[in-house]
Every structure is written in C-alpha cells, then in structure tokens.
Image (cartoon, rainbow, N blue to C red; front, side, top):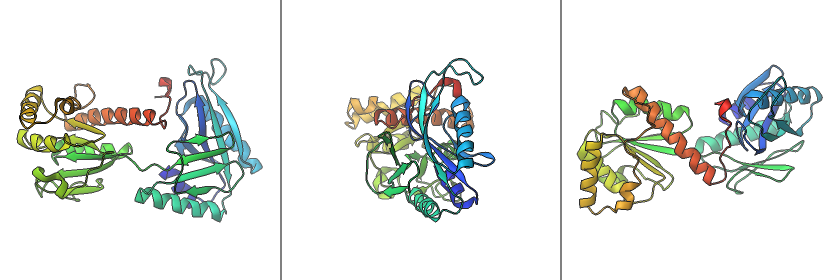
Length: 322
C-alpha cells in the first residue's frame, strides 16, 4: 500500500487504482490486495499476477481512456489464452484518479502519514466517488457490492532478542516482507541503530528486565537468539509469563531441553513451554546466517498468514502464482 500511495503523490499522470473487493474459490490474492496502473501499464502493487492481473491491467487501460471508474469481475478459469488452474474469481473496484486531483493527493499524504505513524484507519472507496478516510470501522476488509472499506495496515512487529550475526541477517529480511522489527541486546556494541538501520527500535538493557528496556504487546512476535543458555532462559521466562502472538527460539535440541528444564524449575506452566516454536524456522536445513534468516522469516510469514486468516483478513492463495 505504501508504494501505491507514494506513486499517487509523486507521479503526474492519470492512474487507475485496482482493489480486490472480494474473492471466491482459489485466487492468487484476496480482498484488499491492490495495484496501480497508468498509461504505460503497471506502476506498483499486485493482485497476484497471472491471468487475473492481466485482465485487470487491460480493463484499467480501457477505463483510463474513458476517464471512468467501475466494478468488474476477474475470472480465472481453465482454457483460453490466459489459462489458469485456479478456477476462482475476484471482484475488483477500479478507481479512476485524475493526475490533477487535489483530493487524491491529500488522501495520499494522509494515508502515508498514518502508515508511517502506524495509526491505522479505514479507507472507504466507491466507484466514481471521492474516497473517505475514517478512524474506526470493521477489522477486516468489508464489501457490500458498492462500497469497499479497507483497513490501513499497522504492520506486525517482531522483537529479536540478541544482536549477533544471525540477527544482522534476519532484520533486513523481515523488513523486506513487511514486518516491523525491534532488536534487544544487553551489549552496547550489539545494540545500536548504526548496526541495525532497518530496525524500528534498538534497545540496550539487561535481559533480566525486558520491561525496563522495551514495552511488549500481545501482538508482538518474539524471536530469541541470544548469546547463550542463560540469557535464553532469562528472556523466555519473562516472555512465557505473558501473552504474545508468537515465541520462537533458536538452538539445538540439547540447548532446548536444558532451558526447558530450567523453565519448569522456575514454575513456568507446561502449556506455555509447549507454545514455543523451537528449533525456530522452516525446516530447510539452513546453516549460514543468511539461510537461517530465510528459514525464520518463512515461519513468521506462515504464522502471520494463519493469524490474518483467523481474523478474516487473510487471502486464499492459488499455488500456481507463488
């Protein structure tokens, strides 16, 4: 979304904003996905690629010539020049945006400001009408056949405990897929904004008192990769006595067994210990810090998708477009 509204603000040309309002069956992306098209075709964003996006770009070109907005259905069916195995369909809102529209420029500035401040909000779109930005509204994307209400993403936060070489590889990968990132370490040379320029927050404080260095929320994902068993235990004991979205720990089975034993001795409930993802990451036999970063990011993407799906904001993915 950020790239789309940056282009709306900066580019001096007519454009069409395509937003998926609803999706049925197996589709490359679901409700809320967007792309921006101009006279030369694609500008930013995606609704999933493949035949659906090709149809969207062709329709956008027609509407640009007419200077019109519309609601259209994109079908992904077997056969034809743009063959697809998905067999689903997307209903999309095509919003024509004149290059000299001060209303859209003002909206773009406000949307970008909210995204930067993670303030949230609800963008209300209706074909041919002035967009509206609301403070409150439905949690997920809502479509009534004419009006589309689209929540502005706040961005999930991953708190990485430990600023070593694996964290150095992990932080930029997490940022590249839309996670906000905080780094926590007790060593000043490992906890600095210069070392982690992509991180939103870098906290240097004793592992024994996380709350004094960083405020955690129930929405946070925690990744534990400290410099040793003792620090892992100190961090995990605090994390598991509260509610977090996800807790994953890097380490061997021997290390995990040792730390889990210490957690039990400290009175941490067995149910909380079982919730820990360890060894962390998707099983791809990762060895190097860069491979480990990909493995961990893959697992976090999956956990994020499960959460969004459970909250009704997820997407039905057609594997042929991955």
